[in-house]
Amino acid sequence: MAIIEVKELSKVFKIKKREPGFVGALKGLFSNVYEEKKAVDNISFNIDEGEIVGYIGPNGAGKSTTIKILVGILTPTFGQVEVKGIIPYNNRQENARNIGVVFGQRTQLWWDIPVSETLDLLRHMYKVPLDVYKKNLELFTDILGIDKFIHTPVRQLSLGQRMRADICAALLHNPPIVYLDEPTIGLDVVVKENIRTFIKEINRQRKTTVLLTTHDVSDIEKLCSRVMVIDKGQIMYDGSLELLKREYEEDGKMTVVLDNPVEKTEELEKMGIEDLNIDGNRIAFKYNQKKILPIDIINYLMTEYKIIDFKIEEPEIEDVIRNIYLKRKRMAG
Amino acid sequence: MRVYLCFLQNAFQTAIAYRANIFFEFVNKIMALFIEVTIWRALYHGVSEVSTSVGAVSLRDMVTYAIISTGLSVFIANANISKINVKINTGQIAIDLIRPINFKTYLFSEMLGQMLYDIFIKLIPLTIISVFLFGIYFPGPLSVLFFGISVVNAVLLNFIITYIIGLLAFWYTQAWQLDYLYQYVIIFLSGAWIPLWFFPDTLRAIIDFLPFHLIYYVPLTIYLHKVSYNTCLLLILKQLIWLLIFVIIEKAVWRRAVQKVVVQGG
Image (cartoon, rainbow over all chains, first blue to last red; front, side, top):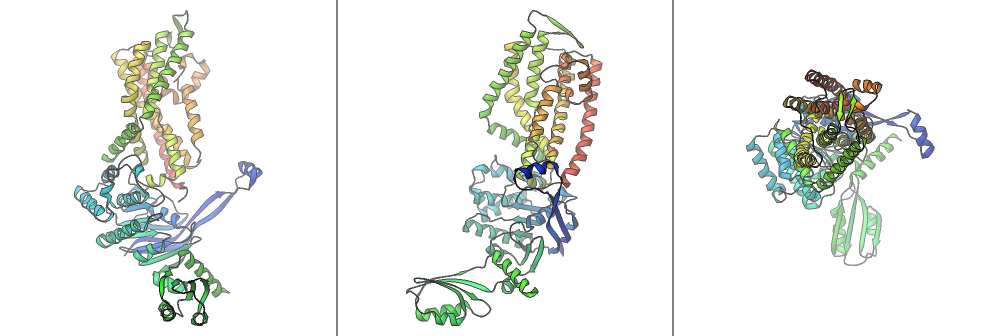
């Protein structure tokens, strides 16, 4: 059953048109010419209870606008949105009880008071029963280790600690729906991993529905059963990550360090690798994932050299989106 | 309800956390008061009373006016306009709006917390020092009661007016100029510095139609017993009517403001 329903949603912002330079600024004082910018352009999707959906796209694609409409702080220009049967922008406070939100770029904790007091305040705000509150604190301590900084004022926390505290704050009242807007931005690998484990655990235990925006492909790979790609306000893809990758990312990238400098490359080229770059005993190249398996390349290299190190690079979200474009262009032309 | 009490408590704690300011704020207020009192003493040099539209006004009345007015300013003034402005400009407003709380009640609780701090830490010592330094007029108990009620109304009025002005930042993202403008309006039209009884008749008639004199001038005239008890009740009624008008305006402005939210960045 769909817990989030978005139907033909559009959001148009009016931006005052400004000409460059001093004269332009002066003109701007007397003119009222507005430019319309479609941040979200006629999108529709449903999200079922218990799904973890990755919502990805380049900066300015319309991700944040969609989330702001879903949480009820922006009113759509056209279309309908229902979250757990509630229209968020008409019933902001009612909707707020059903959701937890993390904006990675800004904190929702009170700057001057310790984390524990913020959590206590939120307990009253969401009327969380004391036993649920205590159980959640235990869970937060087990997975995120917040007990180590719970009595520190927020302004003295490191970014990783702050983000963990922010996630606890968003999930304290067991919301059935959670929106995470770049929850791992700027964090180190260990904290990222912690946060992913936590989100997974919450989803498993409580069937929490999660909508996650990120620039980090591994967030998506480790968490999401489904991905939506948005660009220029339109949804370009909605489906599994596997399919998306197979469909649009054909080139894999590999870097290999060998015991000896590479001399002959004919064999490798025959296998179908491209963009070969040799730097002493380090080689880097691309290969077509549909035609050649990385293990075959490794097998061949092992017959000739000793492999000291190798790395297969994950395709970046940006690359995937670029490929979607290229492919569509090719199809159109 | 409980959560708003938490906000109040937090605001109080935050105010205490920044206590380095206290000393200088205190010195500022005493200095300003000293200057005001000195000016009034100079103006009253060789004169025992001045006759005005509210009857004879003595030097002691004026010194009391200055002290009470400074005392009121310690806790009536609030940071609503700049606070809302910062919230909108930094996008922090998004965080406030994703919570199941009423934004106005939230700001009001924070103001009360700050006010409690102002009263205990600033007002009480300031009053004690001024009474010893300059001397003060004490009215009868009924005047004190009416004064108390009118001060509560004044706090509410100033809150709702600054809140509405603050909301204008939803349209006009640089509302800090409005903050300055409002401060000048208060200084001049509310009677915070110069009692309205010294103003020309026409100007006073105009000011009477505006709500600002209800914030400082009205509590002060009640305290100094320059109006009859019947008039006191009338003035308090006038405060309540204006409050009601502003509550209605606020509802209309808020409804449009939330439609208008443009969260900056992120």
